[in-house]
Structures are given as structure tokens and as C-alpha cells.
Length: 78
Image (cartoon, rainbow, N blue to C red; front, side):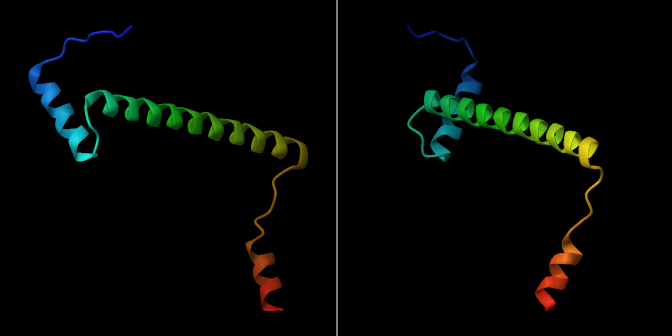
């Protein structure tokens, strides 16, 4: 069952205009798009935190790993 939300006419008009600018049929589609984007952004932030934790764990186990740019450059020059 759907829910109703009371917002000002001015805000609704802004949301409607934003939906049209994005080629969406209505405000509901705009809100669904925003929700999906926010969920994706949240997932990506969590992934970055997991990556940072893994890097920290690897640094604790193996120490600081040197930058390999110079080694790659040397290999290419051969």
C-alpha cells in the first residue's frame, strides 16, 4: 500500500522539474532514482572502508609496501 507525504507546492514543482530534466515521467521515479543512487553510494563507501581495513591489516603483517612505479618504468625501458 502506498504512503502519502505532505510537501509544499513549491517543493513539488521543483521535484517535478528535476524529474523532467532527467527524462523521468514523474516525481516518484525521481525519488526511486535518488534512493538507488544513495544505496549505491552507501555500498561504495562501505567498500572503501573495507579496502582501507584490508590495507591496514596487510601493512601490519607485511610492513609498508614500496611504490612500484619506478620498477615498472625500468621494465618498460628494457
